[in-house]
Image (cartoon, rainbow, N blue to C red; front, top):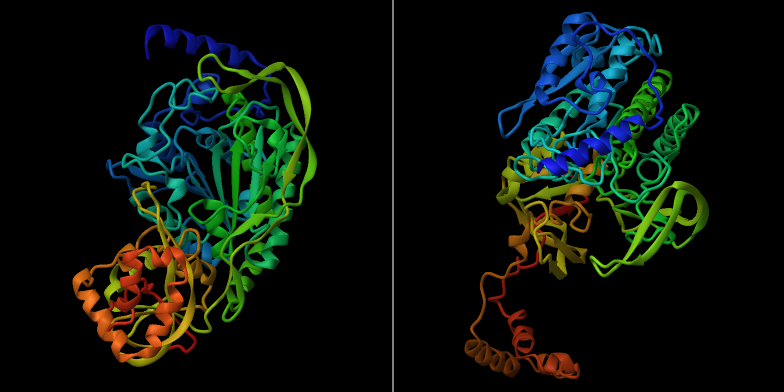
Amino acid sequence: MTPTRRSLAVAVLACIAAAPLFAAPAAPARAGLTTVAERSGFVRTGRYEEVIALCDAFAKAYPEAVRCIDFGTTPEHRPMKALVVSRTGALTAEAARAGKLPVVLMQGGIHAGEIDGKDAGFLALRELLDDQQDPGVLDKQVFVFVPVFNVDGHERFAAWNRPNQRGPEEMGWRTTAQNYNLNRDYAKADTPEMQAMLRLVEAWDPIATIDLHVTDGAKFQHDVAIQVEPVYAGDDALRAAGRAFRDAVIGDVTKAGGSPVAFYPSFVENDVPQSGFVDGVSPPRFSTGYFQLRNRFAMLVETHSWRPYKHRVNTTHDIILSVLRQVAEHGAQWQRTAQAADARSLAGQPVALDYAASDKVRTIDFRGYEYTRTPSDISGALMTHYDETKPQVWKLPLRDDVQPGRVVTAPAAGYLVPAAYAAWVGAKLDVHGIEYRTLDRALDDRSVQVFRATGTKFAGNSVEGHQRLTLEGTWTTEAHDIARGALFVPIVQPKARLVMALLEPQAPDALAAWGEFNNAFEQKEYMEAYVAEDVAREMLAKDPGLQKAFDEKLKDPAFAKDPQARLEFFARRHDSWDERFNLYPVLRTDVAP
């Protein structure tokens, strides 16, 4: 940053720091347990070395209640730190399971420029341990706190890493050192960081995972969005509990002076407030879409980027305390509800792969500011300009009648992954803790369901290092030989919804959708045109019915004008045709092998 830009940034931050804010309850802090954020009046946030130091310092200050652990190492060789906190003495996953204690996992900095959760978490943790807030809540649960998930991104530290965010003075970067967006990686689990997180999740089995973010977007008065799943998606019994969980936290934040909403406040049409909002269910590349597939709760917290840093940290602090109160009160019952969901069989049942809001619209009061929309002499586009000195209530449309989208019937027994794909698919299943077994003998002439694509659309751009694929087609029954070494993935298991999300080829974040099976949909062998001409004539001479079918097909003008399509008509009916082309490699079976 140039000296002029830095001077401007400091001046802006000074004005922000002077603005009226919510104040977290004051508490005398033990030496060495305050953050750079607190000591700077929430103008700055600390570097990752502070997380390492505080993790150790908390464990030393409260040895009976805090354990500092490493749960992974980043590509740039930094330790991934978590604090395990409980007054129960259960500071290991084994002890938590033995004591049947609910576990809540909170992660800050999955997008490391959005770092409110780190500073809010350390503040709330110190107050809880000193009985300055909610005495007794740590007697009924285990709190696993990951201050920074995207550690390498956190250390790409600079001003203006979040140009539309008010504070802190400098912050980390959105993506990892390998330029992955971790909040697109839950389902595909490409990154070492996500694989480490999923191992932590598998070890501790949190009843709720809280993902702490900061929004992008327009200027308005609301200071935080709080979303929970299951609410619209997932197990029916968990939906009711998820709604109560969300509403209770929203109620607590409102009582504390906040202004929360229960949907992500991103306009349908960018930069046009009157276009309103659409609610929905995120696909499982995101935390809130992922954990409901494991029959567990996820909460997405998005403080508003245009609120000053101190305000955002205090709002996040209030949410953390509210969540822990809810887990202390309801966590044991939530565990029983989740375990019942784990035990329910999806075999042969209709299961939604995605969700979307219907066209049903309601009008809501949304607290914004007066604004104008005028042509810009810079961009030439209509631009919205907000006047933050003039609060205004907007009447906006909201579509939040969320319904299932694509629904498929789960297989009666499960999925078969051929031996050729078993190694890498098995590794993906292992990361997610999905049950499967390897077949020790071949299955000859087995009746299975196969998915043959009738339409394939490869994305024209790279997404997270993948060329995504959209498939059209249906499952049909065929007989196939299954070689020894194939994987059988049963549908009757606790993570059945996650199994379907990964292995159903038309699920939005399936392995197929992320392009992991693209080779199966690329034609590798073909017949030269001059050979195909001769073959076609031979086939027509031998089969009068084929001539009739060809003549009928020629009535389609597009087909008639397409030489390649005309030749392919015969190639597909010839013995040389590759029967595996456009065959999705994963099979379904109604009988367990």
